[in-house]
Length: 335
Image 1 (cartoon, rainbow, N blue to C red):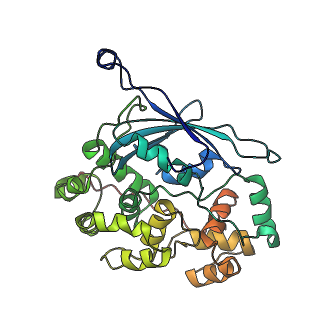
Image 2 (cartoon, helix red, strand yellow):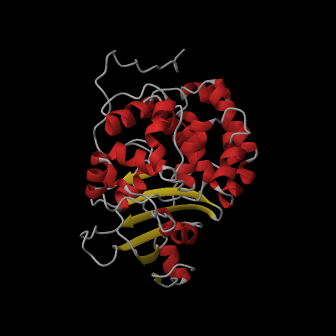
Image 3 (tube, rainbow, N blue to C red):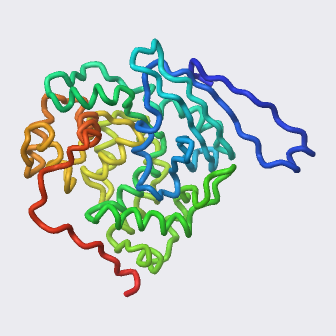
């Protein structure tokens, strides 16, 4: 399948057995050649605790659904986390169901950071980064390989509270998402195809709490979805430039999309409401009041600035104390 350490087990059942039993899982094992914390690495693909496309079950396994080029699929990923002194990474076990099962299984090493080049990254010069990197040696920057699945929720998160965006994502997926193949946890859904997104009526956008600007940005992107997916074969810089030619997609949305879909280690979410404060607090003990100050603090880590922001978020330091009340959660769906 093109990845060293991957193996497949299981044979196709007879027609009689297939009719009597649910679809069997496709199964692969991958011996990671590096330390990788599966849950932490894959966690960026989830959009809140109730994301219909991402779950972590009681056993600690990660479930994801995806609309792959071969069709819908569900994957379940488990792996023990080895000690830092272990000679190799964990043996990752994955089960997948649906027409796109093989595609997801092939993409799994990339999703767990196989292509993540950490050379040149040195956190030793900052005490916070040094401590967090030591505490999370299995953090890798993976890539999902599905650009639209990263872009649409990023657009929903533009200039609104995270809780509002996650609510909209759940509402839209519940109504327009596909049924996941296999034994997916209750409530999971598959990302809708571009045609479905383009045909969502205005009143359903409104009921989800999505105003016209964000809805139109998603619709515009879905009209060129095939071209956008092909951006993943280009350099990070070229993908960024071309993404931002679509009205409504700026630096923040492009970065958030490329971080997840392409694993871009240097994509900084410029324009984020909270990231400058978090970076300033963690790296300088002060609030970075604007993007320019944040970028200055991240300058020494050029090429790995997104990696640094991941570590900052994992530090748990948050940001400086609030000096104003939290913004209220808006809900105008009934109006």
